Image: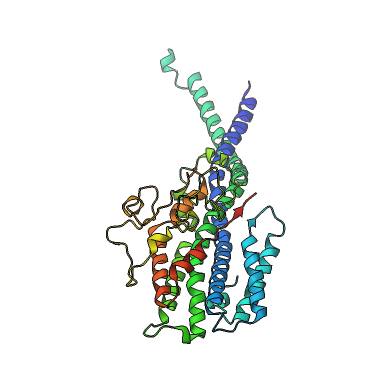
Length: 129
Length: 271
């Protein structure tokens, strides 16, 4: 092995070892970057869906409790029923291509129902779901 | 002339050559190292980015989902009583609902803010490659029996022997939130762990004869399970109790409303 071969070996050895070191650090950094982004997106969606489900559950209870004394329009009750079904069946499935269109449908129905019931919440206006 | 006296002999020539050679190789190393490292960094990031996203998503969405259920519960009641003051019981200030909404909102802000990169670096300082074997393709129904109670693998808390109101799906034992006739919390908060910790053993699990504590399903060490421990923390339990007490003051069945809100599960499937 002459000096030229030796120099070439140093180059390739250095490249390989530094690349391995980079891969090892990159795995940790990639995981952390992904985790942070995922956490952020997850809280946005989790917050939104949890809020909708809880509100709808309360609305159903309120309708049952006050139906004799409080007037709820048939249309609002019909929409509440549909919205309840939509939320019951909602599954945040990333393998489903229609995941966002289902969520959009829930968003629209939620706004509509809350307005018809006269129960538009503050968060609904403040948060840009 | 002896070798010792050879001032500019062959040995020095060799040393000088070696010195130059080392200097050259050092220069090469310095030039090549960042290139290889950068290439490796990109490859490494690509390998784990999606897994990190999946695990972060499940973690974040599960925590946010639970806390938002409490927010939705109180917020929707706040709006209802705001528009229908005739239903507010006498001697009760309906602003207690608004205060609670603000309180939950501030908790959500705190709990749901993404961890900083530095924080995560510290948490994952011992990131191990074997974590890659974790299958993320799961339905994160909070490891629960779900509404129908059909989880045969983990064992279901909703079997016939258990009180139906004590469900792992809610993350908390609804029975432990019951109030006495005076609307007071039955627990002695100073002495009780809050019933939220399953791992370390809870004082409520055996001492109360009236409370049927659901046996938590066997928990496999999956990343999202960490979340469950977080959301079953004492703070969640405490705020849930506060919600029940506040709703009860408004003349409604707080336990029932809370139970109805918490029974829905958060379902996430990642690819």
